[in-house]
Length: 185
Image (cartoon, rainbow, N blue to C red; front, side, top):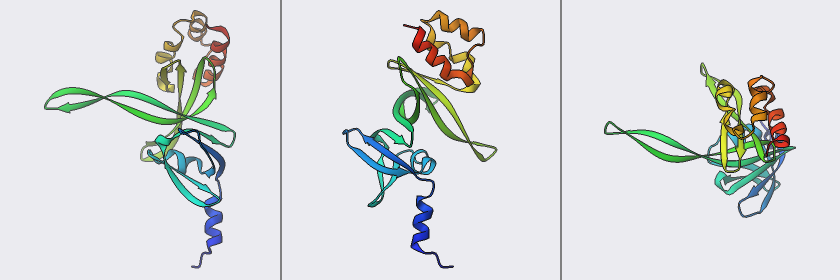
């Protein structure tokens, strides 16, 4: 089978999104990205293409991505990792670095993280939300929405009451954040 380099290039550029990488240094790279393959599949490197060919850059050097009309920001989330060491439980603090889609910016910022999980060995796409209030970041999954959604709004009884009445659900979390940004101090 004979395959031309033109068809390989066309295949590579299909489904690529005009994008911009904003680096920690403040520099910007105009490029194209493949949403899943280049950005979300590799935990440490982002692959991108420019007029000069294919390139890669360490994720830790990128602070923001513009992909089409969507903006993704890098957030760092510390967590305690439990380890077994000679039958004693020890904890070490590590960090996860994610690129999350910016849904709403304000006093409270709403992010959505796209994930690929295996369910019965079949990859499935899903997402969950992060709410940022100052330096505090809350992760909200659909399964634990009613357990965790109260924390970001402890100082806003108006919002807490509406959540308890069921006026805001996981599927309307964007409306909840807009409401809280407009009505809470």
